[in-house]
Picture 1 (tube, rainbow, N blue to C red):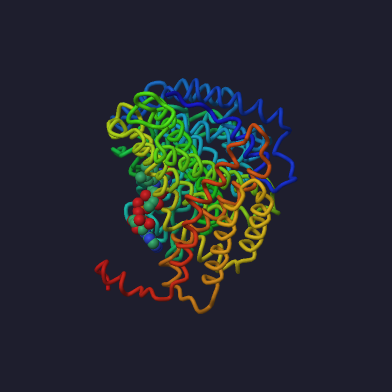
Picture 2: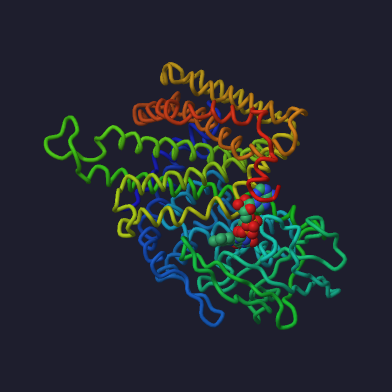
Length: 568
Ligand SMILES: Cc1cc2nc3c(=O)[nH]c(=O)nc-3n(C[C@H](O)[C@H](O)[C@H](O)COP(=O)(O)OP(=O)(O)OC[C@H]3O[C@@H](n4cnc5c(N)ncnc54)[C@H](O)[C@@H]3O)c2cc1C
């Protein structure tokens, strides 16, 4: 089965679902359709055929050099030549300056086509964002044009062996040389595309500590460390003192090199400060927030691909009797199997709606800031969990053929399994949602969102029918759970224990409301939206009330969990 870019679904989501009713689409309809059809064609024809080889051959490391799988070089060169790397990048540095939601749509199709290769532009775009927001004009002028175009690529160097979720523990050092440059020494692990053969230069954004910096996260600064030095006229010079000491052997995304990077074992890599001293983490968050949305989008993209693959298989494979068929029926005709396929489609559509709503909030500029900030951990965690759930269901639909590698269904689950882990694990996202976005912010934005969601469900009632009541109940459940978290009587340990439960509830309730929005706006071409909203309400959103019950319970004793974990 070949991947089919879901252009109609994406266009409808962008125009009717990601933005409140009556809002203009991100671009005029014809222009948007033309761009996305072209992007879809490119991804399906040039990128998707690489996916299997990417998995089978993977990235290779030899003597410090990383070779990417066959075909990556040519496809990546075509990607940048077509201007696709720069879709939503600033015009001042050669980008097309299109809305983030348009870039999001192009990236969804790229990611479905080959998730491993898609991790490269995600990081380059994030690095460009961080440099644009925080670096000096000189650094911007020197590095941004070729990072924006994709001729050079970017990395995010946070993780060290002892510093994963807890970046306060990182030890890489930066020593000022007195002339604006810094000498960087230390090691980083798990650096995506830290070394490769697809570009002439790699621009590393590295978190490190200045001498006498305060301990913890308040003593971290951000540095731009190029693989090769760049002269004032843009010509490339000597190699910097940094190298890739090896790459990981992984469960999935095998074509994406995950590198151990060593900075300065020949005397010190040279780097330049980005932003203020000791404010590096805040600067890196510019990159991390975009990367978190891009990671959530990976969940959408892989769920879409798994759903397409499972649906095609289920029409082809014949087993057992079902009404309307003589002889063995396609497995899709069995009520349970059809229900599984519908669940996959409903979850995928809801996840896409949430991810695109976050992108649309970013396009809203300052007025969308609070919404984008609230939705970012939900997109990252809810959508990546959905990606894993749907990819796993896809294997189930294939039966035994799903468990063997031949069909490619297993690769989808292996590839997407990283997404709940990197870019801040989903547990860390849930803590961010509960402790910062809800409790610290005081709940005003979530209250606004719930009110909008209620209006969406009410507007769709005549189409969704009695099932709309379940979507409304899910919102009531979210409201009650939110109030519980905001209550001074709820202790910190209790909040942390239910953070992931709350995030799932949030995603389920929001997904139902956005499907209702789609159902209310659907014309004859989108008749499925009404069915999906009904099925989502009956089979999926109904979980929300139970989840709220878990959040609201005051019977839970945190000590029980600690004792069972052996840390009592
Ligand atoms: C393929 C791949 C690519 C990657 N790419 C990059 C990259 O480009 N750049 C980069 O810097 N890093 C990268 N990483 C690293 C990645 O971001 C980290 O693996 C991730 O942040 C988790 O850190 P850790 O692995 O040290 O796990 P740990 O932090 O040790 O976490 C282990 C478990 O403990 C939980 N946990 C930890 N702290 C808490 C807490 N406070 N509350 C509740 N639970 C907690 C976690 O949720 C997790 O389940 C990559 C990793 C992989 C595998």
